[in-house]
Amino acid sequence: MANLTLVYGMRLLPAEDIIEVGEAPVKLRNGNTAHVTMHVLEGSKKQIEAQLKQSLDAFFELYPEI
Image 1 (cartoon, rainbow, N blue to C red):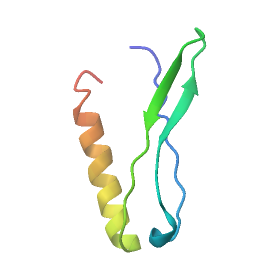
Image 2 (spheres, one colour):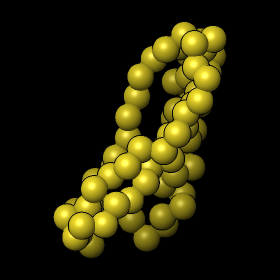
Image 3 (cartoon, rainbow, N blue to C red):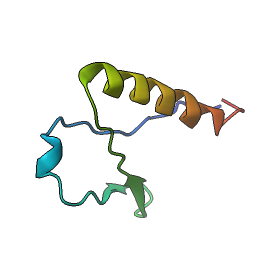
């Protein structure tokens, strides 16, 4: 299997400041554009860390061949 790249972004903002979260574009070497769905996790530091770990585990379950 080829080397993989996990594309993600994080920024911690006050929950009450967020109005909308959209997709992030990714330009591919072949000229195509892919889109990364952005996810929002809210709560205390401990809650966010737990949700992030659970989301990461679930993400890799989608790709059992890795």
